Length: 138
Image (cartoon, rainbow, N blue to C red; front, side, top):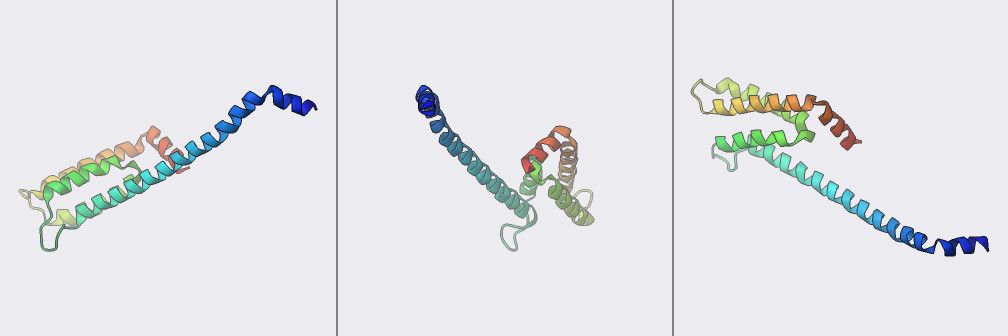
């Protein structure tokens, strides 16, 4: 009898709770799904950029230097991939710098790679980014 009285006295609050819990659960599931989709999209975008950096669009067609410059610059926008980006840029620079003369236009690309590597290194050492990355990976 006391339980029924308590339920009657708190019917409004209980109704709100019983509505709020499924609503909160649905909102949480929505945000988790959107986050997964965002990660998947960033994964695909990153790998597409790497492909554009190292592979020509068509067989037998030389690589477009300006596109490569843009790709190297855009790698700065993917903090979750800073470590592999650094390794990729270091390896490419090592390979590509062997065949570059002082007046070669590819020298611009090598300079952009150095600049991007420096910025990525600086950003990855930032304590706030490290904390944010740890939270995201948790």
